Length: 395
Image (tube, rainbow, N blue to C red; front, side, top):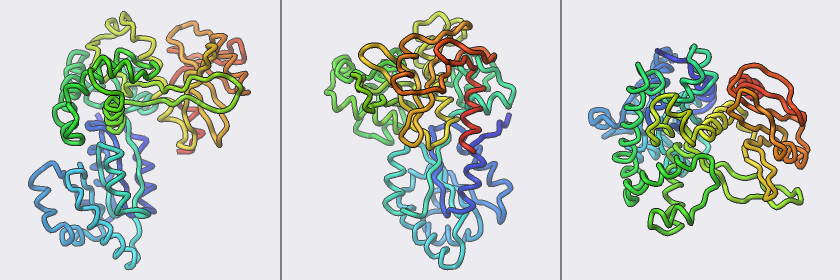
């Protein structure tokens, strides 16, 4: 089943005016499928190389000659981190092509480790490359494909997990995904970091989904130093498996929480780490509410314009906003998340909105009806609010 990806439009539009695009996303998120789909009707044709295949890597033994021979085609290099030396060659080819009048649609580079790839490419391709992210399937993409919202929450947005024949096969896929990251990707991207310890940390963070980050407690539990935990978390963030949501820190005359919150980004991976197979397993687990919160936050952040900066807000007195969206340096949308069929905003949410003078106040809940609540808030379903934010972004 081919699900239309919202990222496709952005990739095509960016390639129309940029020589090279780096498409970043976790392994198995659908980068290759999307790239092949774009290649199928690319004007002038396209060439696809998977640099994890020895035969394709051999083609780049003389990368300069091979890539220059593909002039006029879109060249797709998958798992580009396998050939970091190619970046220097791409720079020369792009510069030569610019002089010949070709300035767009030359290279599409796919990779899994955001910071590592951005560092490598920015050193050599500054001003010649654009970066785009692709995340697991979101509520807008799956709703358009007729996939139930609860299934998306339980299984997450990785296509092979979401589209599995049943919940057992879905969980089996996620177990294998987690194992492959620990056995393959962690040693590849961070060979000096112990994969087993990072796996323990990943599971600990799953149990503490949506909690304030307490590095000292995590370090004590793992038997490592605080800076070491920071490096481990940096790696999981870099691989786009973990999200650190920063606290808003403007001056409102309140004592504000300063630690970030941490979420396993994909709800299905979260449930895989916790061995939750069915919806009944999830609904009976203590993580249920915070799992729904993280799922909603991730989908809303994907839908919102890149110009919007996400935060959470919490004071020591208890005023709190689960997701605060800022635009132009000014917070203007406040979102509370309730896994209840009869949602009601907490007094602390209303107080926080008053502190920040926010009038756009939403309470996201599992239903689909939109209705007014107290304190000037509106109850709204996740899909509808994501649609509003996506429409505002103009993508």
